[in-house]
Every structure is written in structure tokens, then in C-alpha cells.
Image (cartoon, rainbow, N blue to C red; front, top):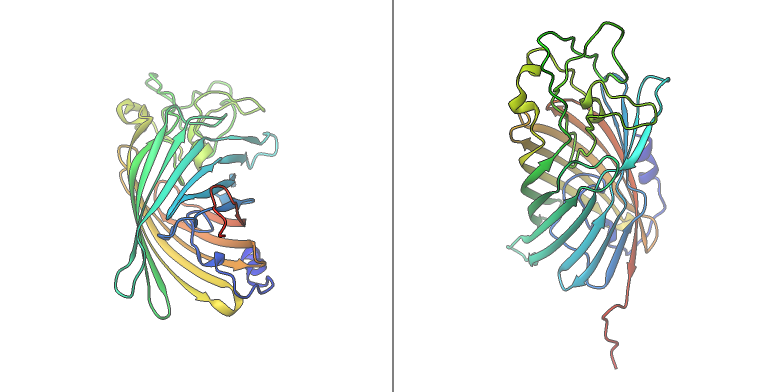
Length: 337
């Protein structure tokens, strides 16, 4: 709520339009059908997401990203997710690391007209690079639609692709004790924790479900704690066909709505999104979000958002805050004579 108040109280930057371009992760997961303009360079400096899970685990995620309009109606981008995990146990050190390298592209198929919505396609490939990277690469392909009416603008995103996570080890012991929720560290003397818990994916990529000690005092007892944590049970430990899965297919659908206050360069946004990870969870995730984008200068846009997962493997609440620097590069540009 403090982040939302900061964004809403920012100075007015009249006549600017960058605040009007909705981007996935800035601050919500909805995306509009407008790529970065040709020769435009968007530098997302400080996109920060803070997630709090039951039990006290904090997950901080930064997604610095650069997008460049390389061709008309076409952009290329690169993103570097960085994660920091803070345990509620004061005796356990935090862990920080790169989760992957994401290379993306987007292209607008049609421009919006009086009756025709704007359509675009986008894609992203995630390379397994970094301390918290999953074991294999994954990708996502997205179809985008945007339609503007007199008071509001609607966005519809549909995507499909693959996921990859670090699987938990599967125990062969007939009797074991489910570890506590968000457990870190070795079990007490004489206790054997059940392994094979299904990792939790709060967003894409989850990136952080290692099944081995990773240093900094983190000896993993429950692999799923890194992404929210669902305590495994004795019954789940006896289903290695599901638990050993480290990749599969996923699909998502999101509907968003926004309203612009042009004279104050402010955009209010809300969306609802559902995502399904096939073979990993029996139900789909359901997330609701609200956010604001504010242009504070001709080149700088700040944003803030609040999201809540209402249904899924693990519920969480998250705050997002970020800054975008909008530049123009003369690469390939021909000066008029």
C-alpha cells in the first residue's frame, strides 16, 4: 500500500504517453498488444517483487529488463531474474542468485482501429543459467489483444509453453516424517524427513527448487520451501512418477482492464489470471491484481502493484514496484534531408 501511495503522489508529467503502455510484470502480469516503438529503448531499472508466504518466508524477486524496438512494430528483449530468499528462522542465512536468462520478442500483427482490436504475438525463451536455474530450458508463446473504449481499455492474454523446476529427491524409506512447512536445515536427531515434495511455482519461472545443499547455511530438508512450500506427506512420498517430474506443459489466461487519467499521466490497472501447470498440480492457480503506472518525467515511469493468489498450490500476497527509463537510440535511423 505504501508503494501505491508513492506512485499516486508522484509529480505530474503532462503530455507523456509511456505510462499508457502496459507491460507484463510492470506492475501486473497483463501485457498490451503494443511493442516498444522502433528505435525505442526501454530500460526497466528496478522492478522488484516482494512475496510473503504462510509461515513467514519472504521471496524477493528483481527482473531487470531491456527492450529495443528493432523493426517496425517489433521488439527484442532480455531479462535477468534475480531471487533472494529470506527464511523466518533468524539462524538461517538468506540466499541470493540468478534464476535464468530470458530472451524475448514481440510483434504487433494489427494496429487498433475504431472496430478492430490490436493483436500481437510474443514469445520468451528461458535459458537455465544461474545458481537457482532449473535443470532445462523452457519457453512461452503468448497471444495478445487490446481494445479501447471511451472510458476503459480491455486486454486479453492467452499463453502456452513449458515449465522446468528442480525435482525433489524421492525417498524409498517406508516410514518417514513430513517436514514442517517451510522447513530449512537437517531434521532433528532420530527423525527422517519425507522427500519427494512437489515444488510450488508462484509465477514463471519458479527457478528455485534445488534438491541439494546450496551453501550459505542452507541445507535443504524440504525442497519446496524455496517457492512457497507445501509440506509433503507420507502418501505423496510414495508417488515418484509425479514427484520426479521436472518439466511439462503449462497454459495461462489473463483478462485486464485499465483507465487512464491523461492530464496527470496516470494509469490504473486491474487483472485476473489463471495458470495451469500440467502434471505438477491438480488445479489451476487463480491470481487477482491491482496496480498503478505514473509518468514522473518525460523519460521515467514508475509503477506499483498488489497481487493475491486466491487459489492454487500455495497462497501468497505480493507487492511490486519498478521504474522504467524510456530512451530513443539512433541505431539504423536515417536523418531527414
